[in-house]
Amino acid sequence: MSTSDNFFHKVYEIARLIPFGRVTSYGAIASYLGAAKSARMVGWAMTKSRTQTEEVPAHRVVNRNGILTGKHHFEGSDLMQQLLENEGVKVVDDQIQNFEKIFWNPAEEL
Image: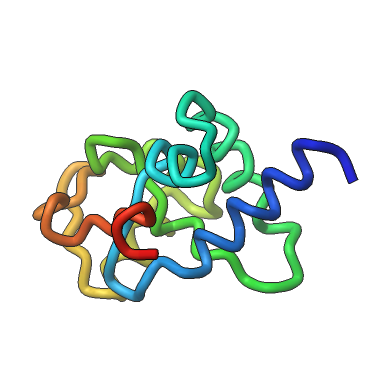
């Protein structure tokens, strides 16, 4: 297993803990894992999460401003938004509304 595979595995473990109807950021996961400057690596992990046998709720991971920057990695142009809205998360113009209220910070929650 390469170092990136091990990091990705840790990212997936954290992402699976994000509660229904809540979101976190790439940077929050990276910081929790002790790799604060690795937000992009978390994004790459989310992109590859479809290859996992156990589901990873990648739609719950957004950028630090609550913008759906990873939406183009989902099938269909609005799938990420639809998945979030199915959980009661309001999205307007690719940005999560009430982001601060529904933000899940693994450093505080775990």
